[in-house]
Length: 207
Image 1 (cartoon, rainbow, N blue to C red):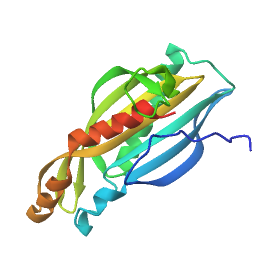
Image 2 (cartoon, one colour):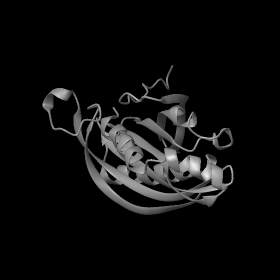
Image 3 (cartoon, rainbow, N blue to C red):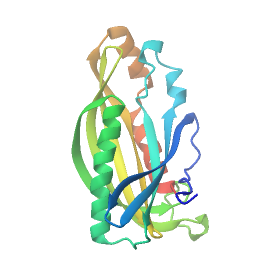
């Protein structure tokens, strides 16, 4: 199969379930094309702790492996182009999942050890590869069962070994208002600091 591409590997994800695994060509530029293998996960454990009416896909993460064909070594210009297309695609993904008022808040670079299992140490024995990811944070809004939630979303673009790894996800940050009973139940399960830490563990450990 000409488009066969290995899926990205992620650190262990306790309580998450894979909901999609697909290969596609997100864009082409003349004779150059990009093949992407994408896996998407949703937080299944959190759904067991919220009212059935709020059982929506409101915490998710994804990882994509992008291969440039024919092979083109990463460059600043190529990384910028991939990042621009990735941002547009991520915003569309958020919209498709019910997130609205999506806005870019900040961007920064992050030293990561790709394939290192999410460990932030610099141990050379972890099998990882040092790389630098461009990370963008977004703010958004999502509504569930009459409750409005503020949400954070992150997208990381990491060039490594002649490919690109895209990692991202979104999670609720706080309850803004709505149905009192449902809002109270959601407040009990929203842990933005833990959610962020888990997402960044994946960003640091994808490979």
